[in-house]
Image 1 (cartoon, one colour):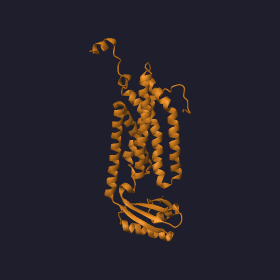
Image 2 (cartoon, one colour):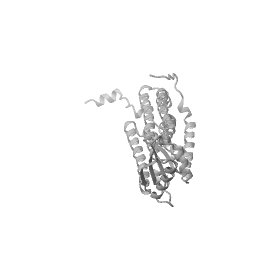
Image 3 (tube, helix red, strand yellow):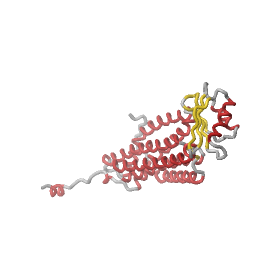
Image 4 (cartoon, helix red, strand yellow):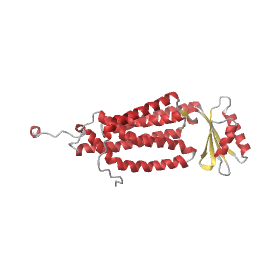
Length: 312
């Protein structure tokens, strides 16, 4: 079913130089933000104290934040946890205070503000654990990228694998660049969002690549740019519907999911927007410039003389 029936092929490849320049500039800006400002790593990666507080009534998160700000903990992260009666407080490492004294100071302040507060648990995430999480996260990204390249190289051929991984890296670097530029907290949930975008973005590229391969067999007299333009145009209806529905769900998490899901949804939102862009206007031009041709998918027809010689 096509809700958006586009009758004429849109000449995407004629704008390839412009869109590639836009991508290149955006990519360089993201790398610059990462190099200069670096990621604002959360307690998961840097180490710190995690406290779970329970209230007999729905917790007032803004009031808790104000209480922590009053005792000098401006960088504390507060979010609801599980139910509206439980909150999770994440505190970065304070060199002047031990984890035990820091948690005691926080609980005393919260108890003074609301005597019904109950301390459920206190955990300390050491810097070594945070470093291991950081390294494992980077390793997970690398393994996913290699897996995607191997899959596309087997399913299509190496040009598609290279194009897809460049397009995916483009999306990931831009997400990380946005988090570095605005100094949004980069936590394990955001890393999960980045990994999800890797899979999501490559799915869109595979749909377009499938149509390109199909067109090479059907459109015998068309040029390669015309084949790619037709492939992208024919998938536009699906792209609009799929991404619109996905984005609606992510926006619901972004605006209604609370602090726990906010940065996760933000990473997904940036990834979905740039994922559409890169699948259409980054991956396809790269495939074209790498020299994809009809001969790579269709075996040359044997002439009558050659067939006769081949017979015993």
